[in-house]
Length: 275
Image (tube, rainbow, N blue to C red):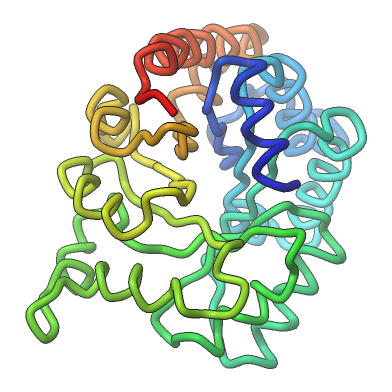
């Protein structure tokens, strides 16, 4: 999916909501455990209840890999279901890959060719030749970790190297890589105060912003400092939506939680900077 289609969906749904499909069998409603594939059954119900409110879904692959082959099959079924029934929705493999070139090429092949995702999160620590194999897919997007929402981000990402924070150097250097126009960036909602400086370096790029909701990030603050004239944001919420309830009404509860965020986003869209 190209950004024009993504922007069209944002305008149509008045939403820039990304829902994280991080499935933990210890947290899903107990009655689903009797299903042949409880992970897919849970995802399908959430998707069917929220697809009109979300422009993206982001499964974290660790939550599927933890269940072995069955988990990976459930992930494949989930993406196939989205691509067939809701092809207008942007899909993100939250895999945080990144390795030497030939290994990254295989990661890219697995996620883009086999699984059919629109994008993948990638760690930049190994540099250009670990990221460009993903960028070689010019009809896909690579979402580079820039400034994450966890406390450990301060261990390295904000440390100054030659007088400049490391995450800023990541932003600047990544713009020189081949097919850099396919890059998006992860910036945590708990780091909203950094967004003004980040936007000076990447004013037009999409930012994937986790951390709103359960992690304490503020939608208002993120939009204040991070929204551009074309929106430029995908705000992710996982636990606050998919685990809103754990009974037979879980999907409707997820829709209610998603609708609240979508409503707040619609207000932000009306107040955004003018083109």
